[in-house]
Length: 177
Image (cartoon, rainbow, N blue to C red):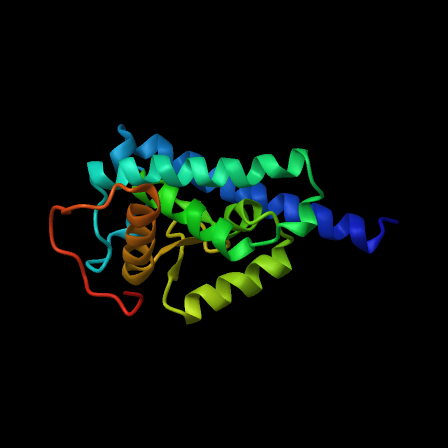
């Protein structure tokens, strides 16, 4: 008889498998990378990424990679900033119109699912991210930055990278200015 740990692991693997299946179906239905965002993200309050966001995402990706590199030299638990890692990952993937599941967000934060769900709840309460249930599979929940979260990340990355300047298009005012 399997132990409860084995059952929990099997259950988690099934959830990850269903998320991968939903992602593969999504990819099969769209021809270009610009159309990879699932239909549930077509909210009017979600700004479409442009070339500027792609440039900012490249900088954010470098930030994320540099943070991950530290774990080769130091114990991972001394650099714990899961919320920041999740925000960076959501910005990078949001700018590239890639859907992110809750499981993927937890992996990006380098934390167990229970801790990740707690952090996602905090980020949602702070109006930095939103959750959407997959239209294809109700067991899969997607997360993305809210308009306030996207704008806050844009402003931070522009400032940190020195890439600040005039942006194209309308920007929704944020409480995080």
